[in-house]
Length: 302
Image 1 (cartoon, one colour):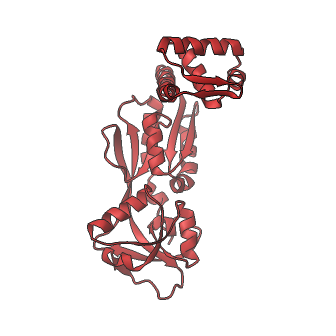
Image 2: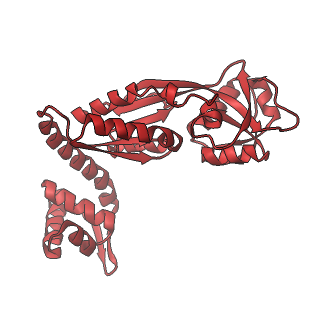
Image 3: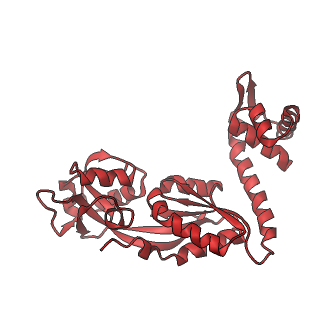
């Protein structure tokens, strides 16, 4: 199996067209078609439906596509690993971040990365924790920051930052929020929450279920920023990390109330894949992230 053939197949499958893939790869279309056909013959499977509109992956093609991407990633990492014989790491690292984390962390991370690794490049991919976790397992990102991930034999976790969740309402909301509510009282408040499998929603549901509390969900909105805006308008209450309401990325003033009996605390972790050897650059980037002191970056405004 030839890596060039695998790359040709991946580009055709991604672009759904031999002509567009040939243009992107700067090869003649007959050469591209012949190499993909040789790959199909070697595998004993039709990987692509060819029609007048282009090319679509078959069921076998869709299965092979994920393996093919992983093989290309491993080949690229092997090249990078040999380059790490140099004193300074080179190559490219891709970090997956939840959107709220990305807004605060990306500028200092990129600045520190450029100072530390001037001959390397970094890419930041944004997505919800569940989505970023899948990217990490598939090899599309090298490192990921995840909220409260489920234990997995395929992933290694390093805790970076723990933060209490709070009940939030519009400033000046009547009646005013008490200083503290118990988890058992959360069912009394109409809430705007992210939909499952969002990490915050999963955590809140888990704690409330253990306490026998049925939540009153008035609306489901996945973007934390939009949840903050709805709470600030007085449309509903929200359960949020304190930094989402008072931290550096917060855009609205909210009235906050501590949650207790028990506290609900989320955990932001640095995740890496156990089944893939990390490049020297990825390892160094992970250490760089740990040095950025996220607790300080996300500290609520005074």
